[in-house]
Image (cartoon, rainbow, N blue to C red; front, side, top):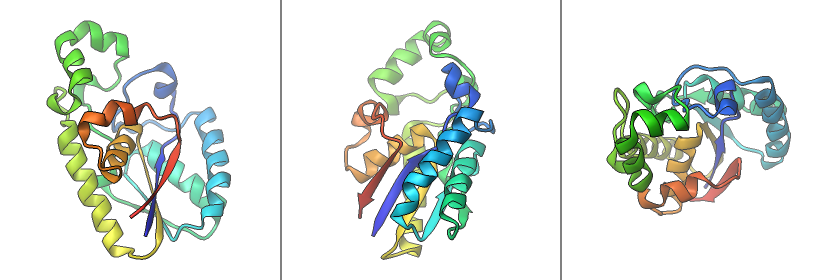
Length: 184
């Protein structure tokens, strides 16, 4: 079985450097264009099914990719959503450093140790995402599937598939690839 993990394309907030989390913000015009390019690139991989969270950027990206393939439907699961950053959502990196200094630097040093106010810990999000992907893999055995979700969720899934643990989260998160194929 193969799982292709795809980062959702950019929104206006991504382009401004804001922490988006799981908010329902549509893709920007640039993000829509890049999703179309990504769809053309990924169409050659002939996936059997595309899964997405309910967050708008992931779902829009998945639908554009699906439209480029023409044969694959998108199934949605709330358990594949991006990480919920609670009250941190919408803040710039500079805002986090200034307003939540101690928590921010602890988050950079040990990302699993912090729970943003009103949000979820990365460890909890990791568990949610892993359970969702394992369920999808069980349902679609011996097929090539695609999971489209947010940047943080993609990094968590890559940590899982690479058996890297959350200590490697920031290294995996900074990987510039827009998608990655994992043989399971």
